[in-house]
Length: 517
Image (tube, rainbow, N blue to C red; front, side):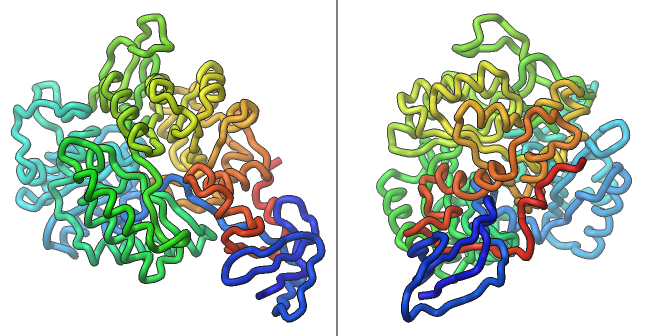
């Protein structure tokens, strides 16, 4: 046993001691004593529990480290220069790039297939948007995916076209996924190594547990095995998996008996290993690509990409309000999918960024009969009515406050100033009593928890009325994430009987969250 002495508790400053045995907290309090324990004096330093990233993409994070990163490109020309150089230095296979963002360009116009064709007409080139819901393909990539010039838009997606109806290379939602799925899939060993690499990077940021929010992107069986192998090889973070609905429960998914066997084998590693925590469903897209399903219209330029408008169909919306964006599923289908997953015993996590999509998700949660089991992911645009309804349903909400830091320029372009100011309403959500956790959605953003918490506490450039306190932000990025994953207080609490992973600071860590004067 180890007795940690002479430290201050990170959220209150209270002097405390903690007794740890075999990686578990035995006791924590002002004064502890145990003969025979090894004493470690922390010299008055400050202790916090390790963080929990309750919504991210672990395997894609590791894989993306091997791809071309376009995050620094602020013009079409800069993107093309980087792609051209990558093509020269790495000439084999598909050229895959990440963190493309046309909202950083003057005018906001997308790179086109024709521009990428000038680099190569034979090598498939695919640039994934930073929001993960769109991409730009050259002609070779479209050809490799068997996309003809007259291809119909897939359900829940769209191909960008010019005024003459020709493909521009822009792929939205399911069209993006369809083409991206045609790129070479990683091997089992590559996936295992990527998970360990991503886990190591997160551990360096003080993260002890992370939730993969789209397991089944490549091959569900192989991915589950990769997470098990990564855990067996000492991946430094515990992983919680949310399986894509279609791969787990859809008509072409894994058979129920095989899925039960896979998940049982996965959980054999115990609490610090890996296990399935729920089912993931997408209801809409993203603000940056104008595919989040919103009430009203987008204010940004969308000349090079479709904005799909139709009449609202929500149980809570009595009027025929105009809406814009992209619904991934019909409202009736979304409700059915949620019910099927809920009836199978799963917690359901549904991606909903736009306020129209949020109403449809809350309809689905209510229809499941067990709304408090489920969690809404993102909830970026929330009305007072929606917040009250969420509180009454008892469902959980997971925010990614770092989005405000990285994509404020995008939100202002697409939504205008008034709607942008009120994004991610932490204060109102907490005051309503809704269980709120913070997360990153890495690799969409860098994923340092301190960046996200600083935005939630200070909200520079956004409405100060929706700030949360430093203590609330720390709880949202620690034990609240553990609870929403179904782990109770196992991680991020340092309560007796729980995981003993902690962080030590030479100063009061709350000082890092103080908003600028």
